[in-house]
Length: 396
View 1 (cartoon, rainbow, N blue to C red):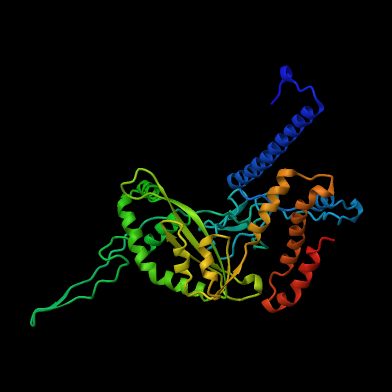
View 2 (view 1 turned 30 degrees about the horizontal axis):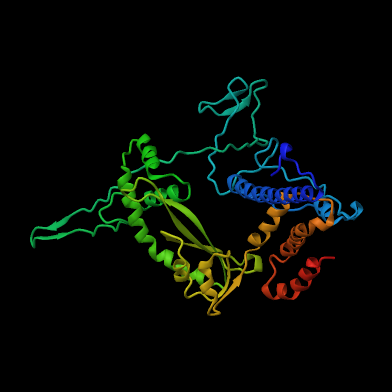
């Protein structure tokens, strides 16, 4: 690139310098736009998903609509949060109630031998109850361990030298000390409340019960075998649906003898047709694999027939080949690239430069249509939505 000491002296050379710098500026602008998109994605991953919605003002600025065509902004106040000041709500009715009755003090009324208020301290007349004030307070009763002793008396008849004894009760783990309630508590704490076994061991130690982490790990492994029939039944129920949602998520796995973790995969398959006015119970079926090879979801869904809504992961592609599985694309993933581009470039005044943002606008126009289709049966949705979607997606 020429500098001040070697400046061009002809018009053609100056023109070439300007063109070269224009090309360099255009390249840098593309690089900046790319970095903006990458930054937005990282922010979304780091701090959670953003709204990805355009309000009426943004749509008007993009499409150049006059401001008087905007829909009025709703002024409906938001519902008051349950934990906000002044919010009153009755405590759940299923909780047991324990009554503490507070009677007038001796200085306020005359009492009988049993300590009951029986007369007015001023005139000596008899008192009768005309009502009561009741207020409720939520309290927590700490959990506690207990030991169940299984006693089996031995009965003998000396004459015939016979011994009678009831058989030992069954246990979840053969010759194990943990009862079913303790096993269920440990599993819920580990997988639902994210309490690792070493932390649970410390909690139990505070209550005077010493259980090593290795012992609890053995409980978890044995419990997995007990739950296998339930997991298999859950999988059959999920795969019996006509529509599935599928996705995978990474999970850190620390194998024995390894100094660092490796990345495994949890494959999630969800059956949930409540948005189609179905009365079938929703359910989720999870499977683990040590890697992200396509053979895993293909093996999980080899007997499934119906609609599969998933992302564009190549491992799902073979499932669509034989026609038993119908592909339904992911709406969020289809919308996100346009949204990232809109966020990185911002709202510009020139409508010719906002054609790419127009895709975001049409996505937002489809949102109320999809929301309105919820809780409709498949038949009603099939008759109603194609026409409504085509009108909302039209450029005009």
